[in-house]
Picture 1 (spheres, helix red, strand yellow):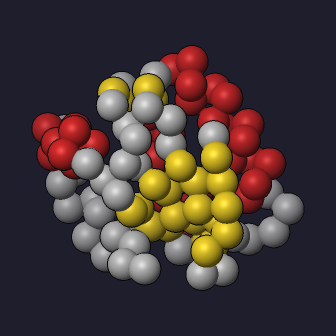
Picture 2 (cartoon, one colour):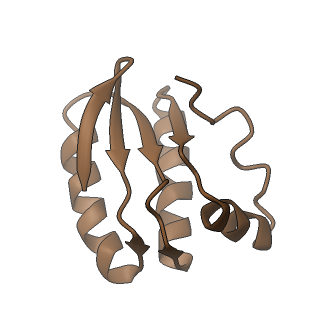
Picture 3 (spheres, helix red, strand yellow):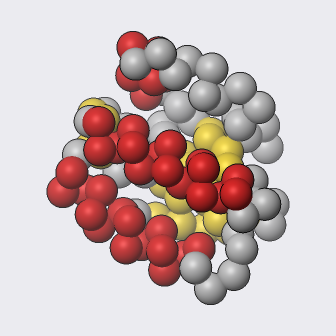
Length: 102
């Protein structure tokens, strides 16, 4: 997982395959990035080619955790596949107000 800093946020590029194996590694990396202090998070979903239920759960959990901590969670570069997966499970409005416009 690649990360950098932009607009006082951590920018994380998601891997192409977001399955259970990738999620286990991502959880550890997100914990290391976000635990030391409250951080805003921007995820770049432009490279996502496949996302399973585990990937959806991770993203939703990150948003809820960060929001509860008073942090901002945003997405940039979501492609058609990424958006359609959320739409198919009835979460097409999940991204309202969470799209990064930088």
